Image (cartoon, rainbow, N blue to C red; front, side, top):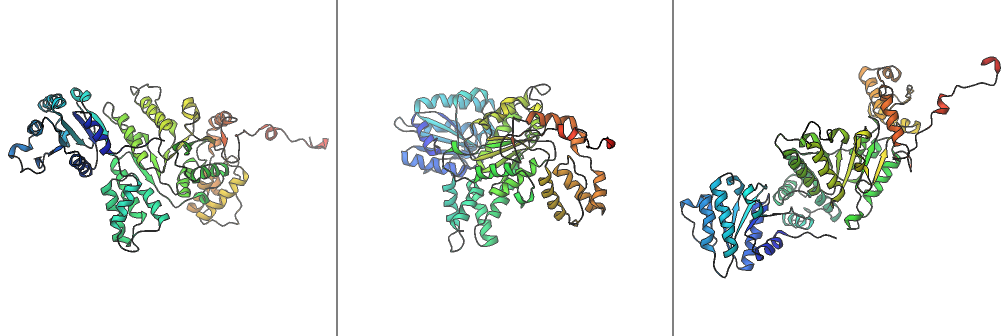
Length: 498
């Protein structure tokens, strides 16, 4: 089982090996600086820090002259700290802002070459990785990881110091799940806001802050709802499969975690609604990945935003990641018309599906399987590929009951002819009946089922799924129902009637 390495350990190894250029990707500079300072103290290394506001700062020495906020001066200052027997470290905060200057890039290049000789290490601390071409081979990039569960629990216990402010252990573990993906400061702010509002740590403030974080990134949206499986008729086999897979006691081994499902069906059969209800049923957040929002106007931006969105999803684990209508999301996978951007984004997503170790349950939905490459649905990318057929009689009755109650329609009204109707069309009929104040039979005259408007594509999808997909309604492989008995003319025994 793979283990994570802390920033302190990674730094210690690279500095001991005399890597003169290190780039730390971090959104928590103060925490990263604290770790670096502690490492330098323990190892008896000389430390200097620089930022554009305060300039050059060397612990234990008086403040430098007025030119110390000049980036060129800061780079050259590290040589004065180097000694033949020791190691000098210079941390440059947000220095990516100055790497558009040819003078700064050249000075940094020369310093890194010199630093290999006199053990003068340059560390750039930045929230992004923007390394000029001239310096790409000179820097090693490492990440300052977000807090793990143990650190989050320490933050919570450090804030909730009074009796009754810390929830019971089971509730605390749920809150820590919710806090996954937050920075240390964000987690501290969320826990503090809970104490101000409720007098104890709760999950509401955590979810509020998490939603804001996702909105600021613009890459994902967080879906939260009170609807569980009781609000969704039918799909018994799919419900049982996902619930059993996700609620099975975690064994700690990432290889034994559920990976996700691919849902195929005609439009309106409940794929998206199922995913949203699944989150409530198993107590996990549902992250909606909108591929369109990842598209950027600059070369390479779309691919970078895709990688960033997948990193956020990993950080939010345990969670459910939903990609709706995936065949449309990655339209253009053949590379025509977009210089291969969609194809490269799709390749990045496929690699993540296959390799990610985070506890993320992926639900992808599709209406047209012909636009999906065969490698997308192969084994080990999903736990199962399910086909959601048009609901049968029992499922329709359950759906009618749900929407009669939702739209306050008299239960004594008989249902109209709902041959080949989907759940969405049953909902539409009930909504129109309530909106227009009509009986269900009259409202049904305004509903044309998709099985009629798109009969050919629905038929092709059913034929393709038969024998290839699992059934969402019954255990086992989906088999298309034969139509021979339905199309055969009924013949009566009495010759006079035929």
